[in-house]
Image: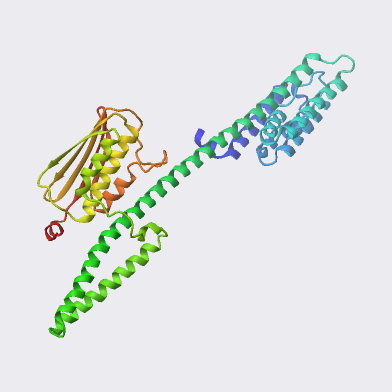
Length: 391
C-alpha cells in the first residue's frame, strides 16, 4: 500500500483531502463548537477548507487561496468567540512553502497570519484571545518552516542523485575509453605481426615469379594471384589502420613487437625498479604464434606494472606453463601495500582492461583476485595445434 501511494501523488492528496473533510463532517455531526452551525452554507465552507487539497500539487497558490478564504469566511460566520485555523489551509501553506522560493512563500505566510490576527481582533473586540493569536501565529510559522525544510531537503537529495549519476556516467565513459584505447593498441600490434607475414608472402611470391621465368604457366598464374592479392591486402590494411588517426601506427621507427623472447629484458627492468621477481617455466618452452606471444608478454607486463604501482615492496613470481593446447600465465605477488585498480576506470587507469581484452581476443580465460597477503592474475591462452606446428 505504501509503494502504491508513493507512486501516485494524486491518490495521496485525495486521501488527505477526503480524510480532513470527513473529520470536519464528523465534528459537525457531533455539534462541536469549533465547527459552527450545521446550516448548508457552513457545511459547504467546511468542505471547501479541505476538498481543494486534491489539487494542491498542481495549483498550490490557488488552492491555498480557496482554502484560506473558506476558513476565514467560515470563522467570520461562526458565533463562537474563539477562532481555530483550518487544517486544510495549513496543508496548502506547507505545499506553497515546499514548491516556491522564500521570497514568494514567506510573504504569503505572513499575510495568512495577519488575516487570522485581524479576524480575531474583529470578532473579539478589545479583549482578543491572546492564547489563540499566539497559537495561530506559531502554527503558521511552524508549517511554513517545515515546508521550506522539505523543499531544501528535496533539492539536496536531487543534487546528490544527480551527482551520483554524473559520477557513474563518468566512470562508465572512462572504462569505455580505456577499452577502446586498449583495443586500438592491440590492433596496431597485431597489424605489425600480420604485415610481417603478408610482406613475406609478397616477397616470396615475387621471388617465385622471377625464378619461374616463362616456364610452368599454371604455377605462374597461381603465384601472380598470390602476389596481387597479398599486395592488395597489405595496402588495405595500412589504409584501414591509418583511419584510426594515430600517426604512431604507421611510424617505421617504432620498436619491434615484443614476444616471450624479450621477457627476460622485462623482468630486469622490473627488478631495477625495485620489485623482486622470479620466473618459472613448466613444460617445453617453444615458439608460439606471434599474437599469442605478444598477448602473453603484455599480460605479464601489465600485471607486474600493477604490482609496482599498487604493492610497493612486494615479491612477485611469474609462471609460464606450456601445455599441448594452452599457454598458462600466472603472476602472483605477496607483501606490499596499496589499493588495487581492478580496471573499472574509476581510478583513471587501465588496470586489468588490457588483460581482459587480450585474453578475450583468443577466447581464453582470465582470473584476477586477491589472495592471502597479495594478488594473483591467471590467464589461459588457447593454442591452435596446427598453427603452432606450422610455425
